[in-house]
Structure formats: C-alpha cells, structure tokens
Amino acid sequence: MTGRPGDGPHPAPAARALAAPRPRVHPAAPLQVDVLLDGLTHPGRGLHTGQLHWRLRGPFDAERFTRAWQTVTDQEAVLRTALAPAASGRGLPGFAVHPAAGPLIVRHRADGTAWEALLAAERVREFDLTRPDPLRIALLQESDGSTRVLLTYHRAFLDPASAEHLVRSFHRAHAADGRPRGGERRPDLRDHLQWIASRDRAPARAYWADAAPPAGSATLPAGDRGRPTHQRGHGRTRQRLTPAEAARLRAWAAARGAAESTALQAVWALLLYRAHGAPGTLPVAFAAAVSGRGIPLDGADRLPGPLLGALPVAVEVRPGATLSALLADLAGRAVDLAAYEWVSAGQVHRWSGRDPYEPLTESVLAFLPPQEPRAPADPAVPFPDPGPPAVPFPQPAADGGAADRGAAGAPDAGPVQAWEAYTGTPLELTARHDADGGLLLTLVHDRTRIADGDADEILWQTARLLRRLPAEAGPAATVAEALRALDGTPVPLAAPRPDPAPRTLRAAAAPGSGLVCLLRPPGAPEDCYDGLARGARGTRALLSVAPGAAAALTALAPALAAGVPVVLGGYPEVEGLAHEVARRVAAHGWGRPTVAVAATGRDLAGALTAAGRRRIQPDSSGS
Image 1 (spheres, rainbow, N blue to C red):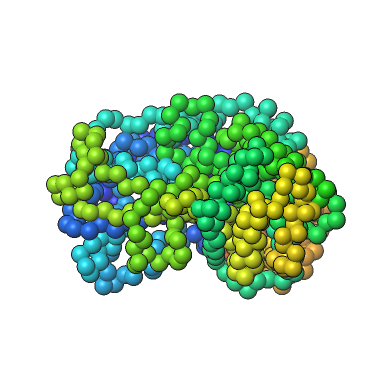
Image 2 (tube, rainbow, N blue to C red; image 1 turned 90 degrees about the horizontal axis):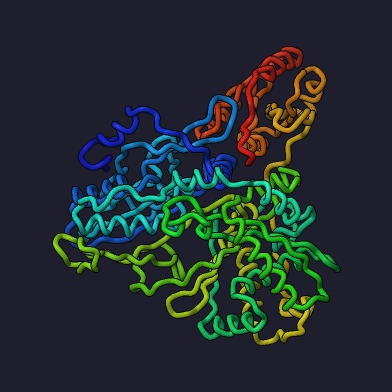
C-alpha cells in the first residue's frame, strides 16, 4: 500500500493549502447541516459515503493518472474544500475553499487486498472533514494486470451527479495528459453557498409551516413489530417491471395527467395507508428526492456540489376517493416542491413546529433519469441482480472531440459503476429505467428497523400495485378498490426507533437559549437528575438522556441544527463519554461543547450554572 503517489501521505499542494492563510469561511448550506447531523447521530455506520468504481485494462501510468486528478482538483473548488469548525460552543459549521490541495490516492496490491473488502472498508472509513479531501481514490492492481479504480466521496461535499461530472472531467484531463485547459470552474461551491445564504427564507418558512406533514401521519409502510429485528447494517432488494409493464404504467399515469414518478408516489401512499390500519381518512407522509439543480443560479445544472436533497410530501388518503384524485393531489405537490429545491428537510422540520424528536418522514422516493446503455456487467463486481446504474465513461480528446480508447497510452476503461450512499432514513426507494426500457425498483433499508423479509415484502407489494393498477384500475377506481390487489398479503412490520426520546427536565426560557444535556450513567434510574431542574439556574433547556453516545448525539441534534450553545454534563461515571461526544460534535464542524462534571448533585448544579453563564450568542442565520 502506498500513500499519495510520489509524495508520502500528504503531497506538496495539500501542505501548501494547510500552511496558507485561512481562506474565507462560507456558512454551511442547510442541506449540508442535515448531512453532517445524520452522520453525527449514526456513528460508525459509514453513512453519506458514495462510491464510483471501474476497471482499467492495459498499461497504467500512475504519474499521468495523478496529473489528471491534480488538474481536476485545481479546477474544481469543491475538491479543495474542507470543513471550517465553528467557534467553541456556538454557531453552525462552515466550509472553506483552500487555494491548493492534492488528490488523495492510495494504491493496493491484489495479493493483500480483496476487492469486496476494499469496497466495504472504504465505505466505513471516516473522512477527516477538516482536510480538503472530500474525495479519495483507491487503486487495486489485479493479478491479470488490470487496475480497479474506486472513488469514495462524502455527501456533505458532492452528490452522485457531481461525482459523475468529476469523472468526466478527469477523462478530459487524462486525455490531455494532465495539461490544464482553462481555469477554475464558475459557478462553484462558493457561489452556491453564497446564493443559498442570500435567500429570503420568510416565504419558504410560511409555506412549510402549513405544508409540513401533520402529527399522526403514517410514515412507514409497515406495522409495529414491537421488538428489535436483531439485524444490523443496510440491506438492498430489487424488483423489475418489464418494458411492456413499464409502458403500461406510463400510459396509465399519463391518461390521468400524471407522470410515472407520481404513480410511484401514489402506490407508496397506498402502502403507508394500509399499514396503519385506519378505517377512514389518514394523512401519510414521505420524502421525495429533488435534484437541487432547478434553482435560478446560472450553471447550477453543471455545478459540482451537494445539491441533491429530499423534501417532505404530505397527502390525505381517503378510501372513498378516486385514484385519479390522489394522483392529482400528488402532482400538485410536486409542482410546489420545485419552488423549494434549495430548502432542506431539517429546515422544514424546524419551521413545522413539530416535536424535534419525531421524524416528519421515514422514507425517501427517488425517480432517477434513464440509465445509459452499457457493456455487459463485470462478473467480478460483487453486486447481485441487475447491479447499480452505469455512468457514461467518455474519453474526449485534447481538442474536445471523442478520443479512441486505444489512444496514446490510455488504458481501456470499463463502465463506471455507482454505489450510492446510505443514510439514516429507514427506507429509500429508487426507480430508474434500465437500458432495455424496464423499470428497476431498488429498496435500501435500515436492517435495525426493517428486517430483510419485511423489506422484500414491501417492495414486492409496490411492484404488484404498479403492475396491476394499469390493468385493473379504471378512471373511477377508488383507493379502497385499488388496495384489494393486496388482499391476502401480510402487512410488513418495523421495529421501534432504537433511541428513546430524552427526558425534558426544564424547557428553554426562550428560543436560542441553549441546551444542557445530562448523560445518565449506566444502570442509573431515569429520574437521577430530576432535582437539578431546581438547583441548576439558567435559561437553557435541561435534558436527561439514556446511556450511550447514540442517545446523547440524538438529543443534541435539534440544538446543533439551530446553532445554539450546548453543554454536556453529569456525574463522574459519564465524563469519558461526555468528552467523546464533545469530540465527535467538533469533528463534524460544530464548536466543541462545554463539559461539566461533578460528584454530587449540588456541585453539579453549580458547575452547570457556571457553564450556562457563558455569554455565547446562537447562530442568527435564520436556518
């Protein structure tokens, strides 16, 4: 294994970047805050880490490869961007573009590294977000002389469309032997962050205060299991509609003035309704993916950055209403979402006034652009079934035209495979037309909430409705009639959320006052800190949370999202945990929380009172 080619673990450009004067810090976009918080509150699970990989056959020129990526890094500001931590105990994270950085490239030999193991290890290996390395490259030299290339990127900096764009930029640079063609791309991430910061959020806040999912909405297409699944990690299951079935679905939806994506949302709404078992009208809620590239910023469609998001969709399902009415309702909501692609789900939650510990949605639906034709799948790729979509792999010549794959020193490159990032959302359903015109449905599930068998059943029922409704549901068909297609099938089950909500000992005196989070020692009773609500003076909210880092980080999330000051406290048994939680908070861009620990309730109350007197102003960005 080697570090960055030719220069040890950190090349000269990166060293210069770290030694240069501190660049301008741009406030994180709300979507970036959401991504950072999701990763923070689900430690050790490799969330928000996307991957692209392909195989190169033929001679591999490591220096030329590195020069090409250096050219891309010099031209794309996002590849020189790093987290700029907030001041201690306050504010939201920021991002800074460094003047120089170098690509992080590590080479492995096949005799000591298995490809499947490398994929998994790179996915779970945490990024140091404070360094300008949002994308890292692993090379695996195979015994047959080919070279596998693996790009791993963090979703706080790049979305899948951006990563694919950077691969195409790399090919242009590689075809030109790394010689720069033009300067920095503009607009870039800095322009996007400035555009987001300049938005008037009052109209969006007013809209979402009314349009956010109401309390009591059905959010999972599964009943209550009442017990854990005893499974870990994420699972993936697939169904495919044939080209003929996909064409019938498209025609059926179009006849009702809707798109295929709306038909998929309607089917998902039916499953949410059915799982809840309500006899009458019921609000249901899910999130719909938005590209973030429809914003009125010139060049946003080509801008590498973290633009892809998901926004809540809430709709009432009435058993006596027609499917046509449900489709029309959902189509109208899709139009509304288009005006707010720059808004994040976290902002919507805060503007809704809902309990910050109750999710607005627990599933995401995405309808992706059609897949490009590709070469036959590589049998060595460890992905079952049809596999992830391929990314076109152009190799333009230096003059901008198409280059021969056999041109001067260029290895033969296979199709690029995309493996998108996992998130903390229990269910993510993706639909995409494959190269043959079929409709590929992929459901990724959090196995701690949805067991593999239940995920299979959810997707099977989704595909069943998508197949049968075009054949059986006429213009006057009702919701109740449509659901008869699932008669005799079981209702899938879901485990309860793992971390209980924190115990509120005292509410904040006013918005922005801050939060004191008390960590309960293992085995301590839930009321072990109740007396501190009277003894610890101050205006900050006072919470008591269950033992463990995950519970503490979940309890902190709403305060961190709002940029208000945070204090961690407790008895000496939790001091190590408190400092570990504080370290993780700081590693994700927030100021390191104050830690206050004392052996007696009286001393702890005094320490918390002193910590609460620190005059720290909360973030005022209006997020």
